[in-house]
Length: 231
Image (tube, rainbow, N blue to C red; front, side, top):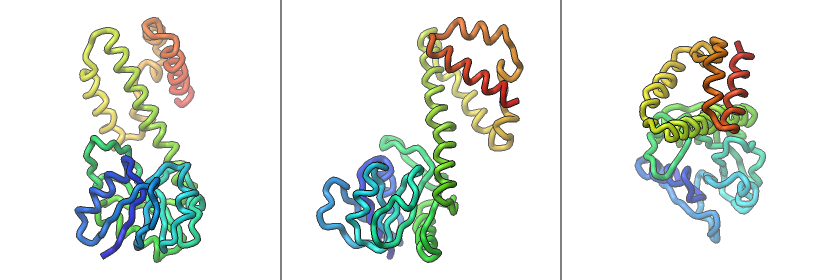
């Protein structure tokens, strides 16, 4: 039985605890980072906390292996004097949405092979997609994730606002969103690109801009130009 201590009570911590409770070989304990007090002993301590708190909280832990779940912080940001590692899951987590960890990529890093294999063993109790990713690679992945997830979701928000303004249901766009996400599983995003920008359809672009707010126009023009520049 592997003992895992999870520090934190946010989205990632909540889902991890729930997943590990269903793993036969994991004994999981959870504590709030604001109420550290006596820190329970554990084979692996996972800090599922905000990036700003990683250095301070990790400096208080004496357990043998301490890892964080951050995509943008390096392993060296951990300030414990024992072994360090990273247990990063590249996915968006919300407490209200169930998570299937079998589809989640686990990006792991450790200071030595023995610790890496331990993290890999733990990850495999709840997941299937395991990757060895160093701090520089993970930072690049995190930036890429901001583009494909956070920025894209903001564009969905704009699309939804436009639909609401013109009294058409946003759900009409959902098959299009789904088709694009399926398409890039077999085509590169560049080859999958369609629309007026790639065709340099100036009349359509002009008519679109006339319907948009000033802020939406700036975003539309910036992305349109980027698409033109990329092809």
